[in-house]
Length: 598
Image (tube, rainbow, N blue to C red; front, side):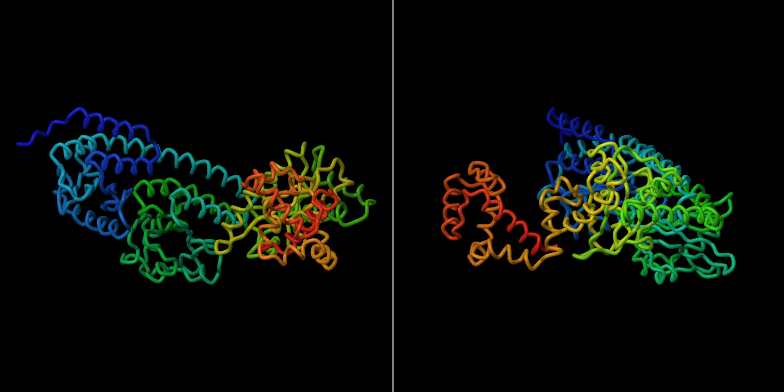
């Protein structure tokens, strides 16, 4: 009989592996570490770890190491098929075709399996098998602690979301509430998308609500209707109140395959939506990003279902009773447009009227004010922003960020009047706004790559000067796509001559072109013109200081001196003359703005 006791090195390796697991709380890193540490214990190889889901009665792959896609798929199918045999679930280990299966049990119940293919498909010794078995004995309690941590984390996140959602019922439209729900459910479950179906008693059918499964298109949404007389998973869950999970919707007979194909669904979880124990509809989440939906996902959604039902019902009722509030909002919007008209588009005699409007709206301005002009770029062209294509939720988040509703749409852009205490505050607010808008606009327009740019006008001390800030914000916004090194947020006073030059191109391109030709025509005719202009730009940027320019160009100082001499010989420019340097610098910037690919 082989000696199966562990030596000191193996015991140390085992202890380190178990300690490594104990140090990890998050589920995904933990399951990755289980595979990695298991492979280490046998000297290397490939591996995959499964958890057994009691609701699906199926092994769910969690993490793998060193497996090609085809190898992983074959090993998943093989393992899932093998452990359908209940008698194998409690074995110490199984060995088949150079593959080792180590079942995981907790309180005699099968909970998962670690699969290892040793390096070069070597046969494991009894000692190696023992060390993996010892290791696996510590895994169940560590997994359970991580699972409980994940559950608590998700419950806390879902409670925060419900609290926030309930506050928004009075402010958001019914569709915006639905949009918030389906997006958050997707995030909580780590699924691709979600959708809500509500019962229509007049037509005796469940109807998909917009938006759903990543779509706002009526032609797609209206296709998904289920009568209570046809065979369907949605109907079954609605009528019985019993939730359902599938990991293979395309071969599950409970599902209408037309809808499965329409939304390209593979894994699906469906729960009923309740109001006072009455079912009002169902919620689907589809395509779990990291595999399959689990019993824990089901419990989380069931815990949320009544709260979600109440919120949806309240939003639906609120949508019928907002008439008075809508009138108040219409008056407010009218006054805000009048305010901008007085400050930006009229003569200064209207400033008193602007103060009166601010008083009526009960808006108190901080010591300083700036205008922000916000634009969105779509494939090289400005996207036409207006109240119809910008979700109301974005405007509400902006009001929350700025503390005032002073925003309007004009000429395809959004204009915001923002009061603040200092320049640093307005810049900080602008960057926060950019991050929020970039995320939200791209969530809204899933199939488009949108870029958000914000032009920030000078921070001024009185509203009498706000029209200057507006002109500056407009100029820098138009220039930003062409001067990428400045980023997506441009504060006019910090952008130097770029904004002035961009305005010159806009209004006098003929003379600008003549100016650039005067200084750059000879250079542009040379084969290495690009390298010459790059050298010139850096040299001029450092005001002719060879040492600093050479450092930025990563060349020796003598090399740079030689290049400058050659440029002088070829062009006849005296680069020692400050006026020549200024003219060349302006010409290079103008050419950059004229021919930038945006």
